[in-house]
Amino acid sequence: MPLATTRRAGLVDQVIEQMRSAITTGEWPVGQRIPPEPELVTALGVGRNTVREAVRALSHAGLLEVRQGDGTFVRATSEISGAVRRMCGTELKEVLQVRRTLEMEGARLAAKHRTDTELARLTELLHKRDAAMEDEQWAEVIEHDTAFHVLLVQCSHNTLLAELYQGLTEAVKASVAASVDTSQPGTDQVSHTGLLHAVRDGDQEKAAIEAGGFFEELIEKFC
Image 1 (tube, rainbow, N blue to C red):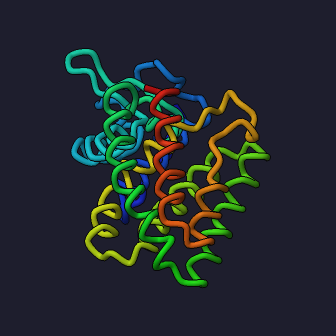
Image 2 (tube, helix red, strand yellow):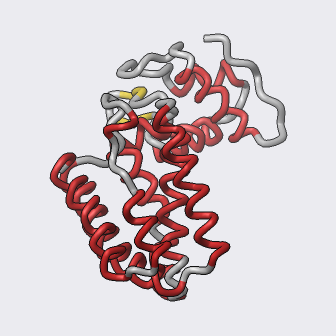
């Protein structure tokens, strides 16, 4: 395992990046147990606590899975695939249900209160999202889609609603990742064009219906 001995500064971050590289390059394949802690300590030239912190961080990101008494295994090659593996079934359904409740009201209020500047930004994000879908650049799709939904709720100009939704950003992004069907062409993914047009036209009821509709579609498809 060609891991380089780390420098003193930012030891944990350096170890995380080296271990992440071993995972993403396939040196440590998905499903394989990684080298035991003593071997990592020797190879990296760091203490046990540093290795444990790095493993904990990568486990939280979904790339590693610690199995008590059995070792630590590679679970996914990226945070996105890790999110997909972590969030499915009941958990995904619950997140989508909460998002539906908040976004339907957020969309309704956004249709009434959004500014021209906010509308331009929503339009830009949706354009980037759709362009990334056509190119099947799924990491970009997830980033732009998440930003679109967060901004949509901010456009409600309801401070409490926006703060509640902002606090769910990590769960929102994970649910977006879990509900993007990478086996389908970009043109077959859920469209937000109708929602954007309703917000643009100030049609509050249609905006709420559009926001609720695609969540129903996602829940039926993935849950």
